[in-house]
Image (cartoon, rainbow, N blue to C red; front, side):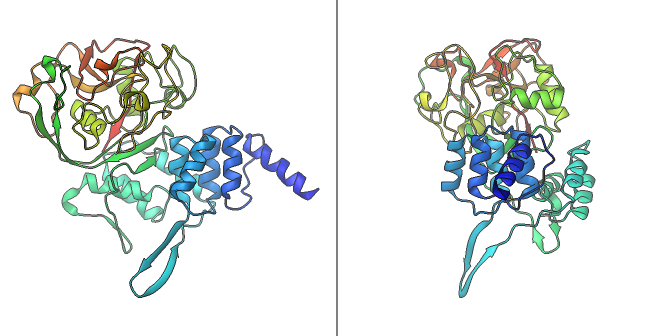
Length: 388
């Protein structure tokens, strides 16, 4: 009978009908049941962050949770809280890395992090690390500090030294609840891909571009539930919490990103992230990576249902067009702006990238450039945010 009441209490907490009281760290089975029971994502993230994870992370676990319906944000949160596999050092026995204990200060910590007004101000991150040196956002704070003051080297907390994450590492943003993937600095060839016979004139000449600073970019398009959370509205034609928000103007996309402490990616950043180290026309088989006119049924689809690219980004091609920060100029590539290009200083139309659910394959190429006036609100237009 006690077990029955315990199960009932746990079910009520999962549904949000009772205050969250952790039954201990979540087991893999408990988490699978929560995900399979369609517990809303914000409630799942609350369970993960406050209760902790009582099992080790592995690719097998990722596959099982994803199969149960876990979103990228939930997967990223679980991975960050799960016990790490034991590490072996030469001549010594394995010692498991123990995750920081969850405390009653978690809610206060999240509230403090959410109070940030300027994500370029290093004083905030210094203050956060001073209060919460092992906090749940400590790694992100160290990275932002390093980006703000690269000449100072890696910021330290105690004996720890911050290191840049590997490409594709994700973190959940506390303001919009979406996962963002880390894109490292590097050099790539922007423009018409080798052997691509469908390129338009404005995709030439192909040229080398260097992105000097790493940045974060949305692992998915901004979803309708995220837009509702940040802006308190949902202008979309197609409706569903996990669908990409659509019918968004450039100014509305920019406003959302700024409200979330982020920004729109530049056109160069977008293509660099979409290619993820490849020079091919696309980062995979089109039917496996994208929703387009040949498989979409003339509608948008939930984000992250297709395969990601090598840097863990979903729907960089297809589903909805994505606004970039740049004004459009057909002759931009010939001007030799090869280091962190920002596009022309002005213009009449803004650049869209990626193609959408109602486009044919020619528009779904890594180098394809489209453009519309900033005030356009079309059912095929969405966006994702970026930030340093």
